[in-house]
Image 1 (cartoon, rainbow, N blue to C red):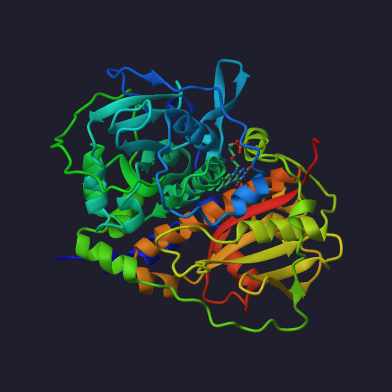
Image 2: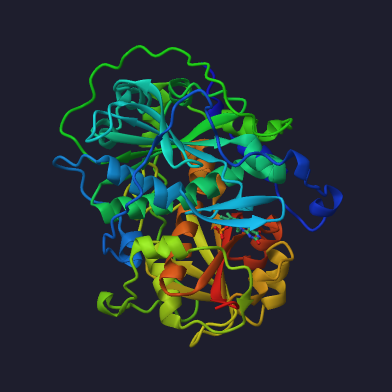
Length: 512
Ligand SMILES: Cc1cc2nc3c(=O)[nH]c(=O)nc-3n(C[C@H](O)[C@H](O)[C@H](O)COP(=O)(O)O)c2cc1C
């Protein structure tokens, strides 16, 4: 049987083929066809929508403790109610703001997303829950409601697709996150597949934190037979594919045998007049797909392993521990509602304690099937510090296992950072730019091409935590794109052989 996941050239072909460089964006400029801009929502026009309750609970859980959590133990009976589900969906993918402009309105959602295009869709697969009958549902963000795609308990199909992943097997609720290609490719073309990981990641950072605040265990599962999950949702896989699963809650019983579910063939409101296909992104997805339960089992056994502790060259700088009692207490609900992407940074310093909190809270760990044993991290953090009190401006590597910063080179790199972040002002003006780089060779050797999905997703989740960590401290943040190879060269020789994955910059907003 062919195993595209083990054909590792596919990752390199995609990753190298979608790198940005000074030259590439000049040789292949892209002009947006505004007349053909995709609709920001998936809508099933023939299905009735059941609105979700909007009287959200203030849990009182601080954002900084929610994002730091590595999960709640999966035991006992923890069944989410419809109110809990509404809260989880709103604070992960709900419309939190809108902006009117001549001729239209833009909608902004709870988590940051490249181009505000919101190409990640959410589906629920659940047992009978308080106020929600067992079924498969699509979350309609436009109306803040659910549309039932199938009636009955279909969780067993997902459990089997994960080769009986133990936590998911006892989850009363499974959230399936999908990526809709065209909705992002309209602007970003083939690079969209990277964005699936980033944008699904920021959304999951919120979802994990909100699950914790509501008292539910939640675990991210990336090992599943793609086709089984896609078929359950009846996705047209040329357009939309399942990307990740989130198991929420706990029940003592495993799901019963699932009803038979054939194709649904439901009409959809078209996203655009016409869609342009970029085959490279679909090929990357197919190359990282798992075809059988045996492949899933093997994938789950793969381990990156902890990195051997490499000593810091020079004097290590320990990030500053801050007692919980001294941390800002703004709740996760408050912080998500006020989060946005900073559009202009003031060139003002942040404190070393603020930076320490950011790094510490974003890297405590994520409950995920590809991050075992606990403490495993696929991405390495590198910093360009412009203006942090008590820390010399320069380039740093963050050793997450020992919580130490290593100074790689001292200097004022504002101008260079602006260049690295695709010649934008944001990374030049921020107080600190936090880059994610990964040893993709090692990762895909272990996990196959699906390791690439996992790497992008992990970066998006940690990036989402940085966003929330910054806003919890009344700072600003923005995700950014970058010139791939120039970033690696900038941090080399330390980063030699690694690949640039993600970038978030943080500082004081100029519009405070
Ligand atoms: C992964 C990622 C990359 C981004 N890249 C850029 C960028 O290069 N330049 C920029 O101005 N904004 C960037 N953004 C910010 C988005 O444009 C912003 O999240 C989106 O417009 C939604 O607005 P909001 O974050 O204020 O809710 C990025 C966001 C993410 C999550």
